[in-house]
Image (cartoon, rainbow, N blue to C red; front, side):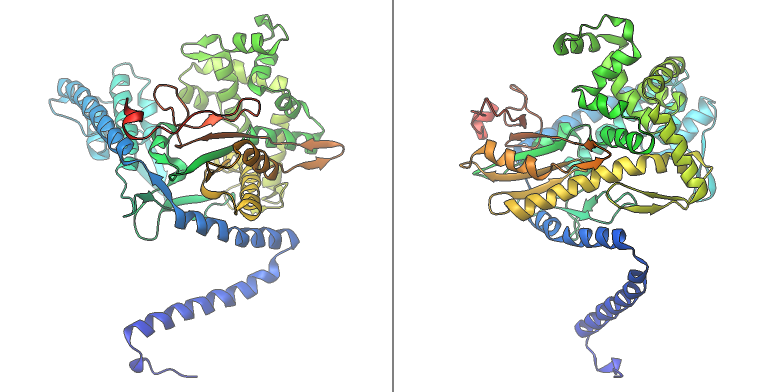
Length: 492
């Protein structure tokens, strides 16, 4: 039927326009759906099923404590002012003028013009561009006179970023709502951003020190579940399934993966075999502020994802030679990991296709011999599997516990919800932990990724003095006897 557009008013015109858009989407889907195999169709249906809990979280939002919010804004503004004073003092001594840490043009003129440091270039959308981003500034920090200036600039940027989160516009009812995108990334992990009405922010990138401004509703208590060592266990599962090397996964099952890694990498430290004593040894200072365990954790995570000694040394602020020694010992202790790296490189060359244990497929269109493409491919399976594992657990909690709990937020490997305070906290935690217990089997081996439950009245971590309302690990044997502190009680 032909429609005379002159007979349609503006409101009806918008409806027709949207209807035609839906028809086009439907037509495209009809063609694409024929190309889906059973696994791809299962993933697609799973993502559609997630729309219900996601819309519920987006509609509910997270209540904001205005007192904590304003206190945080005042503190960060004071920090930013103090840092800017020191930056301007150093800049005045060098080029006789203040310096804007957020201005690429000024920073380029300052470092490459006045200080005559080597120019740092990067390629962006096919064009070569002079850079003053974080990576470029970190390279300049190797120069003695530039280091305090670079450190101050980076800290100003960090403070300003945290400040922007606190100053984000919230809704009229005192809640911050985010917009979750279920299919927002190539790994299948969710992304989030401001909501459809222009308020809110990306809740998944809120740093731990800012989370205390987000609180449960009156009469409710927050409960969060984090997957423990999820990506590390997924790496160990890949090594076991592909090559029969279960050493890394067994290390994760041993309790404290990072302390056990310390034992394998530094066997000369006098280990006792007693968990508490060995943890104390692992917590000894190894280099500057880093303990042996810190190095095993951070260095191990970076090594799993093909981080080079030079890049990791720059981020961890340790000598490159030290990271080379660490990585050599790490890969000797867990030989399946570099073998998995080589296997992934072969897959890129042969098919450019990887499939996760949950059946999610991804084609890689970047150059297969490019290091960036290889690193992306190596990170894909552990990160995607962790995201699907968490989201399946989230859907189960929504499906089977929605009469008692209200979903609040998802942060990649963690889910947060609130429940009425009169309910049995331990029983709620046990049931939720059972629902996220998703196991895989292969030739008599089992992949287990446990969860850790924490409860409290705000999203920050518990601190007896600084944040008594924060999330505290739930102990089945010792019930949480804390009482919610509000208003003057919290301040005093």
